[in-house]
Length: 326
Image (cartoon, rainbow, N blue to C red; front, side, top):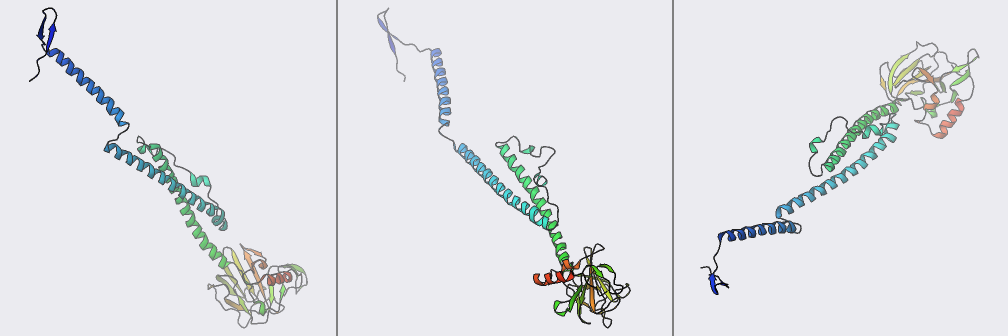
């Protein structure tokens, strides 16, 4: 039961009962509610600066985690860019040069993607710019890897051809040094043994006893093994591919051919034997090398089985302007 309140009335010199008015009570209640609401709003805003709800803490942790992952991914992309740049450098400056392939321009390797905005779907989010930059870096990296992969495929094919080329080039002496009597005549102007005139000698003459083995100087296919070419007598021609052809002339009449036309031979295979058939003054092997139809000096191709000392002696002998044997 609420207490009854009185006040002193000076006019009547007596205590009078305080009458409660509903209007004043409503005002007080309204004022109290407004003050409470204002206080609560101020308290919430101030407190929120120092205190976090569980949901806010979770969202904050998630954001920090995503930022950490973005930073880690950016670092990984930078490391991969360094690695691929190193591979590209070796590809251009070593592999492609060695195999006579044109280096790939760096602008082509690092070019971006033109056209419409590829990353529009990533706009409108927190840190969209970071995500877009990362995605663009990843896409460029993918493109560089694809270009490098294609380049290595090309290098692999070139390497196969290079290996075949190295095996095919006429690279050894057709007669072993231990079987030689002497190197009779080299590539260049020589005196013709029959009419004594000075003319160009397009091969090298190796003197050796009849029946001395003659070796294929590189891998290839026998295209001729006959005596139907004027002056050469019994002779063999081998097509080595890549424009190279070797010729072995004046072979032994008793056993001229150890191979047949169309047969594939390997470097070092015995293909015939030294003789003196055709336009020949004495037993010897006349040896020629052609590249793209042009006869060239065979002395440049004996790197496969001669020591530097042996090569120098052979070079010196081949440069002497003497009388050829054919």
